[in-house]
Length: 134
Length: 134
DNA sequence: GTATCATTGATAACGGTTCTCATTACTGTT
DNA sequence: AACAGTAATGAGAACCGTTATCAATGATAC
Image (cartoon, rainbow over all chains, first blue to last red; front, top):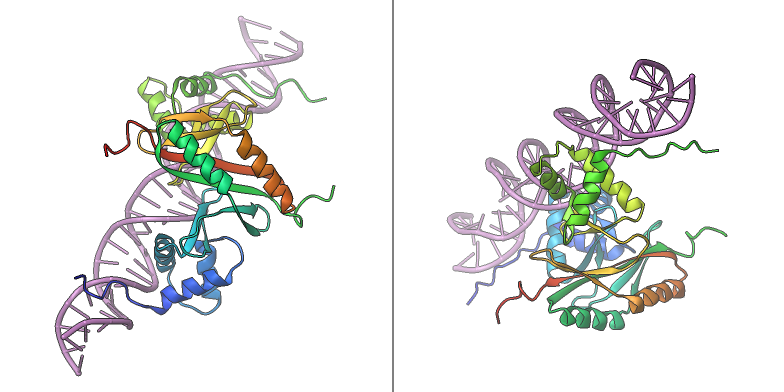
């Protein structure tokens, strides 16, 4: 029914996907753009934003808000839902299991008559390396 | 040692505190400013931001980021740590106990060598009134 | 090859927040 | 009560991340 042409394959989109997959922790769109530019890609900033939004929508990337209002992105196994432990100094990210929290969010929401719970559960801290010596 | 003059009492600061205490759910700084202005206060926007930042720092207000990047504020009993269940349609807010989550965040952080966990745990959803009929 | 139309990218616009700096006014002292 | 010192204020500019605009480009179907 729907014509086969929905999304076109462009090297730009692929470059963003690759750059995201290559990175370790969460990256901001701007940082990703800078990285790509430094690697020689003449990709535009707007395109990076668009690609990231698409990837997030398709479940190929995970996004979250840093405490200072930036949107951060990270490659992510599709469809899988999990949370993160992020070092607020170096950006190191650990994916964490949160089944318990998952259930808790659901039940707490239901308990108060809320539907479609969209929880935000992320822990920012200092990783072992970045923790103060004492 | 430190001179007794640290913070001055101004009607502006008090007005912000009062407006915050009067409100029900979370409010954005801009909305709070508009409300104050509508009530006749000639208070400036920058001052509202400063007052909110101060109140948050002193633990008299709670702040969180809405999913679209705004900072929201709410009066809060000092020193008490809790989380929120927020209706993403009407803004209704319910304070929720999260002892379990609290402990979970601590242990998960410690488990991975992280210190000073600063967790973000908030649940956005649709309250009973705003939920779709079916 | 050609036509179509999603995608791109430079730049402008936008919205929230912070900064600047001259002015105001709270505070402790005289 | 008047004063001096100095936080605090406020209008507007500056900032920063993000989104919209729109002409040019190029991937895809035929």
